[in-house]
Length: 216
Image 1 (cartoon, rainbow, N blue to C red):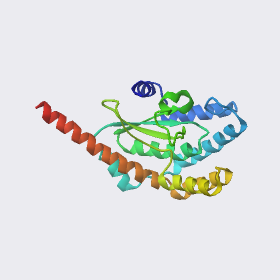
Image 2 (image 1 turned 90 degrees about the vertical axis):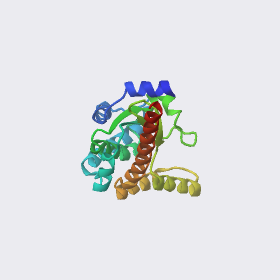
Image 3 (image 1 turned 135 degrees about the vertical axis):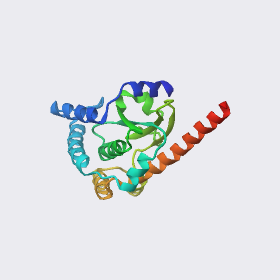
Image 4 (image 1 turned 180 degrees about the vertical axis):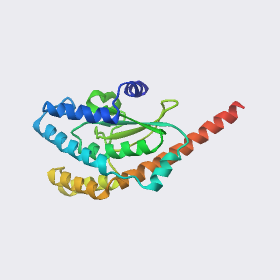
C-alpha cells in the first residue's frame, strides 16, 4: 500500500484540475475511466452540471468551519474518484469547500480509480471498488490514518435497504439517492468527516507529544 500511496501523492489532480479534466473529456464526448459508453458519458454530463451548482451552493456551518480551523496537524485528503460517479459528484464539492475552510490544514488531492487500481484495492467496500473513497493521510509522514466513503451512513442505509427489498440497484434508487443528497445539502457528510478528523487530530497530537517526551 505504501507504494500506491506514494504514487498517488505524486501524481494527482487538484480540485480545479479534476473539474477541467472532466469538462474537457465531455467536449470530446468521453468520460473518465477505462470503460467508455453513452451511459457513462451521460452520467458525467449530469454530474458536471451538479458540481457546477454545488460549488456555488454548498455551505459549511460556522461551527464546522471553526472545528476545521482548530486542527493542530496537517493532513492530505486523497480522494479516489471518476467523473461518471454520482456519489463523487455530490461529495467532492463538499470535500473541496471543507478543505478550503481549514486554512491549509487540509490539502485535497484527487486520483482516478481506473488509473490507480492498486490503491483502490486497498480500500474496498464489501469487496467492491466503490467510490468516492476519501483517504486521510498525515502530511508529515505520508502515513494513512483513516478512510471514509463511499457515501454517508444514511445514504448507505438507503441503498442497502432498497437492495434488500428489491434485490437490485436500478434507476429508481439512483434517483432517490440524488434526492437524498439534494435535501441533505452535504450536512451528514460534514458531520461524519469532522467527527473523524477531530479524533484523528487528537490521536496524532498525543502520539507526537509522547514521542517528544520519550526523546527527552
